[in-house]
Length: 446
Image (cartoon, rainbow, N blue to C red; front, side):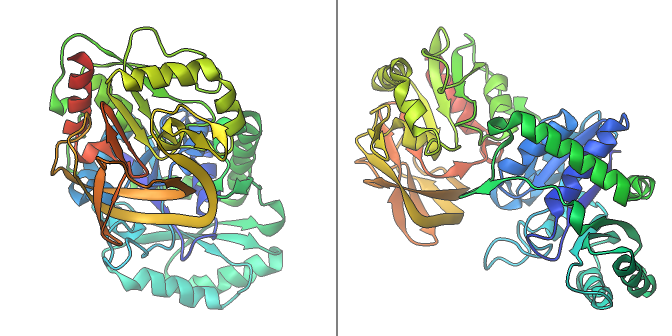
């Protein structure tokens, strides 16, 4: 049984990341083995969670993976830990658009049988906070709000008024963080700047968050609440379920500051399927890892590093040669841009006959997709759910053999299947369809 709690809020911007990351770091500094998790598809917050705990930050997304996998994936990540902290997404009851509670923080809390700490932005209220907390605590009787942490509190008198108002609510106040001591983390067009791009500053920021939480929260009470969670009663997810191929083909996985978007389970699935997974940094390495038989290029920020990626001509040529040889290549979002002819006018690998550029439009949301072309990653007819999150466009948007047919939010085809390349804007979670990793490694070994 792993002690666990979910950090939720009435709305985005209330301070979930501040509190969750600060709690993780504070517990880790106290000698506890902390398992970090994030509700939803977000890649950036888990990087800060990993920095705070020394363990991979893992996502729990009921839309991408299905509700049945949430508890097993959690148990897999939390194996051997003393406490797990799960940072929620958006407002506590906000989920996939038009689909009720699906993929909401509240749903994940129920699936994990975990108590919830509600983080409330108290900057513009006093007695009204009691009505707010009462509403959230009573909306769904299956969600157990075990405490409140007040954020952006203006003064000692303000804190006193808030605590008095909440005395009659039955929900204990577990902490209060002052407005003047908020720790700032820089943001840009897709959210926080990833840890990999500001390692030293991120270490300092996480340490400051830990100190802020230690000073403002009753850590013993928070830990006691986490330990009140009942037995989960599920087995842990196992990456080895799909079986392994022989031969140990080398699969190179893009990493470094330009390619930070990846789910931990992807490399675990590749390794379990029999691959030797070798990371490389397209910003620094001028060649692919020795013996590379397949290539995985996930998401990230190639638009920020376009000049540097373009300037690494030896690697661009090596990637193009591998792709044109028919070797399996799986590219998502940033990987798609990197394989194109150019990005914002900067030459890229040229493995795809397409041009990419930044735009003013944010493309964001869950998608339902079906594979419409046979590829190294998916058989025709494979159905799964994914997520798009980008401010770039690529022209054309699909090749002669598209990767996916989309049903939501509109019917269209998207992406490219060309020789062994499968490239698309769609982010997917392979735990939902572990056969894709095995199929990919099989093609690498073949």
